[in-house]
Image (cartoon, rainbow, N blue to C red; front, side, top):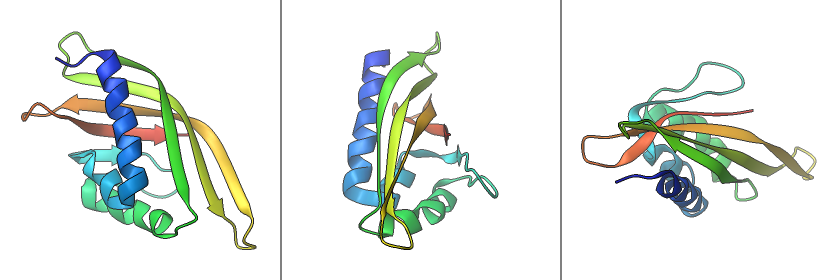
Length: 125
């Protein structure tokens, strides 16, 4: 059975998978109708739209996104949960200078029919 500690571990596993697999790994952790809230433009819905949104960032080798969950909670029936924490995004700007952005994120996870938890909604500031 999922616990808050296990949900935090899942979030950490998600981060490690993205370090190794980039945008495809990122998108694979979303539910089929998962939503990613973005700063500008329309929010991508679904794995392919989320992949298309993230692949340009991840295809550049100098770009990096890492995060660390701070807390997790589950609904009483364990069908929904959330994690939140801190992220750091690093990239090279147009003048080839390293740029670092830090912020906070929240991820909402939903129990799927196969027993796995996938992301329903992800947002950061």
